[in-house]
Amino acid sequence: MRAYAILMMLQGHFIDTLLAPSFRDLGNPVFSAWSFMRGMTAPIFFFASGLIFVFLLMRDKAPFRENGRVRKGLRRGVELIVIGYILRLSFPQLLTFHIYPALFAVDVLHCIGLSLLSLIAVFGLSRYFRLSYPLLLGLGGALVFYFHFEFKNADWTFLPLALENYFTQSNGSVFTPIPWVGYSMLGGVLGYALNRRPQWAFGQILPLALLASGLFTHYCSSWVLVQLYEATGWQNFLAHANFNFLAWRLGHVFIAVAIFIWIAQLWQNIPKLLLRIGSETLVIYEVHFVLLYSTWFGIGLSTFWYRSLTPWQAAFGAALFIAFFFLLIANIDRIRQYRWPWWREKL
Image (tube, rainbow, N blue to C red; front, top):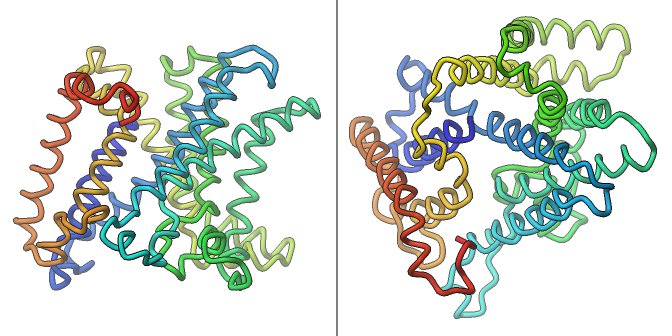
C-alpha cells in the first residue's frame, strides 16, 4: 500500500508540476480520471502511516516509558519535521543571509511527523487513564475532521509565521496537520485491530466490510452529515455536507485498503523490489523533492520545464521519473556503502 502511494505521488507531482495549464481540463475524461486518482494519494499515505505505526507499536508489550517503539516513533516524528525544513533550504539564498518565507511552509513530512507524535500522545493518554486506545484514536480522528473548517477559517495571523503555517495554507503550506492527522488516527484504528486479529488480513470478512463501508461513505456520507446537522443544529456538519471531501476520500481509502488486502491474498510472491520501495518512502520523497522542485541549489526539473509539457511528454517523463527511482532503490544498499560512515543509514 505504501509502495502504491509513493509511486502515485511520484507521477502525480511530476505531472502536476510540469504539465502545461492549457491541458488541465477537467472536462477531459483522461485528465479528470488522473486528477481523481491523484487526490487519493495523500489520504492513502496518511492512513497507511497510522495503520503501520500502530500495528508495530502494539507488538511491543513493554510499559509506555520503556516501549522501544515509543522512543523510535518520537525520534522519527521529530526527524521528519526537521527533514521537512531541510528539504526547503535554498543554499544560494542562505549565502546572502536571506530568510525567505517558503522555508517555513509546512508539507507532508511535517504532517506525518506530527501524526506519529499524535499517535504516541494518544497511546500515552490511553495507558495513563486506562482507556481504549482504538476508541481514543477513532474519536480523535473524528474530532480532527469535525473541526477542520473551524481551523481553516480562523485568523492565525497573530502567530509567528513558522507556527501560523501549521494552521493555514495562506502562506504556501501544502498540507496542514488538521485534517491530515485524522487519517493517520483512523488508520491506527485498523492497525490496532489487525495487531489483535492478524487472521482478519487473510479472510474475506474484513475486506468485504471495508468495501461496504467505503461504498456507504462515498454515496451516503453527505446525507448522513445533513441528518446530523438537522438533529443537532451544529454548523460544522452542514459545512462538511456542502464540501464533503474528507469523508468522501475516507470512503475511497476503505475501498483501496480492501483491494490491497485481496491483492496480497492472491499475489503470494510480491517482487522484493516493490516491497523495498514501500520501505524506502522517505528516501524517495527526499530525492524527488530536490530533483523536481529545484530546492537546495535552484536547479531541477521545474527550473527547465515548469508547466510547459504536453500530456504525452508529461506521461513519458513521469514513466522515466518512476524508472529512475526503481533503479535508485534497487541499488540503494550499494549506494549507502559509498557514503560517509556518520551519514550512513540517514539517507
